Length: 207
Ligand code: URA
Image (cartoon, rainbow, N blue to C red):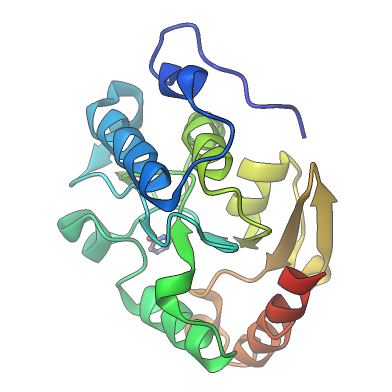
């Protein structure tokens, strides 16, 4: 993956002055700055509903979960993955022995789109915020939940049905391809697949 490019408009200039190694507190402050930028970003807000959903969790997380775009519940509260799919995701995180307070959860698109699936332009724009969040958190593993997450981060059109469970390594980060947690709401069989894929996480973090 290409290195983080700082946009010329200065929107992301915070990282230019960033020290090499950030403390947990500095990481939280940097994430708060990005959240503020997202809440003021006119491109992010275009054709969207509700409040910004920048992400939440441990600023020093080893594992980051990436979804698609907030839903209605999230757009009301500003918190990611708190609706039906979110409850399932949080349940699965606990089920595989991880703790919600140790991970970070976000999406490439930070507002609820008026249309169902985010457009390629929306995903490409969201990527800038996402790469900044990765640069600050420095996760060991990023879990790409569904096709949109994989497209946003890896810039590749991936069949999750075929490739879920696969790990792609890039610039020191391991990316685990997985189903979006909304999938088992429509196809209950998928839940077992997600659990199997997530069960790899503890081991991947260690290697
Ligand atoms: N789906 C997502 O991808 N993100 C959320 O925050 C909620 C549902």
